[in-house]
Image (cartoon, rainbow, N blue to C red; front, top):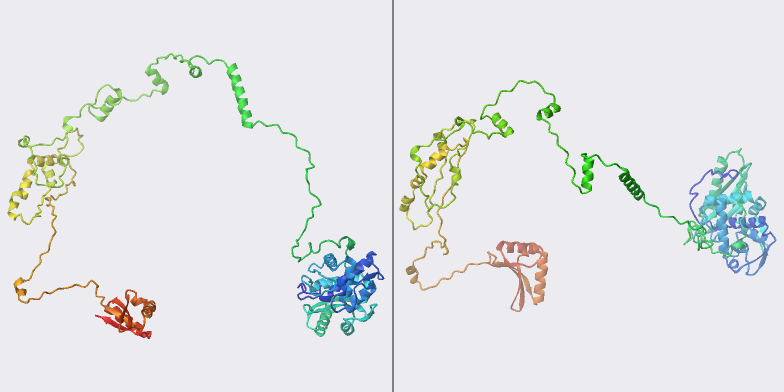
Length: 620
């Protein structure tokens, strides 16, 4: 960083939050200088060493609990030797205890712009949440140089008198090795490594650099030399110096020393980003009570009231309607009185027609012929005459043979059972008046279109001989259809493609309840009588499953059943239909799968032998 302007000339992981170690003491000394500047302390102020300060581990000055020592010696010991007990004593003197002083340190860091830094103690020993960054430490070193230049020379002393001892600067090696180096502070813990914030000046250039996490003092100092060289090479020769603005002085820590720590601090468990403290509870509203509001009449009700009033006034002031008008009739109906009939004025039809439309001279149309459609329409419109019957020459009359008029059809045979064609299908054409619109049909041609139902005899009883068919011949059935029906069918006006479906008449079959037996050929009893032996034939119902698989002999039934179960699980593909069976013979228990076909048994044995399982087929 260019200390003159605060410009960052080079950085690498500058915002990584790490343990600052004893670089923390720069903030402890900064606050001590603030207290001296504010007049609340002086370099000669006597500080009583607390128990907490006296108990801090090295590096230390060797202070004892209750010991009194001047503040100047504590500042020298903290800045030069990096004594932990001296830094803790300074913090306790300023804020009362280490917790309150840690809060003061964090608040001051925020004032300086160290946004990523939180402190937990005054000396920098590793603690949870005690973190900072290289960028923030550069900012703190720059403020120490510009805000308190009268005290900055302490950081460049090789040795110093700390009252009880003479202390040596921990940064002597870098101060002696690098040209222009004049401060500031070292730091080391096992968690942080070797840290260093240093400042050097060459000509009008001042560079401040920070190293975190060095592996050793030599490696850290070498890295610092590298950074300083980069900074001096990158810094401009002529720039306007812009010192940082010092923060406003904080109030006396004695006023806040007893406050609960860490409630509003960053990275504090249970803390919040912003805390609002309420000084008192409001129990009553300071506002005056609202004035009572009168109930308002809805707009719809107000409009309805106005309309009702206007309507009542109109009825009172309105004049009665003239007699004979529609208004007069409506008023009479509303009052429950019969309206006075309006005299009807007879007006000739000719006058009405003339008023409706102008008369146009047109030639008189020719009178419609009697019996025509136009004539009938005119007669119906005038309601004068009934429609006359059409002329006789326009009818189509079916011709009938006079010899067939007196004949009647014979009754149908009762033996015929089935669906008979309806009589309406052979009805004579009705003699209704028909206009001369279609040609006449030849009765003989129409007769050819008639399809007569044929009857088919079905013999269902073998006992009936074929000779009985002579009495139910097809000829006799056809003879029952009389000539009158033939003529009627011929004279009916039918479309050319009209036909009748043929129906098959089937005689009813007698019901049969006795069982039907197939013919059985029996052997001659005399042929077998001489043998004297009875032959019994038994048919198997197992479907050919006479084979099985034996998987071994075992000393107990439990072992045999266990072997069957294991084999069934291992070879379920072929033995899933088999019946597991155990049988005892000769003191041994045989384990078998029965109820298999020959192919299943052979396949199962081949698969079991392939698995080194003893197996043999049985049965057949």
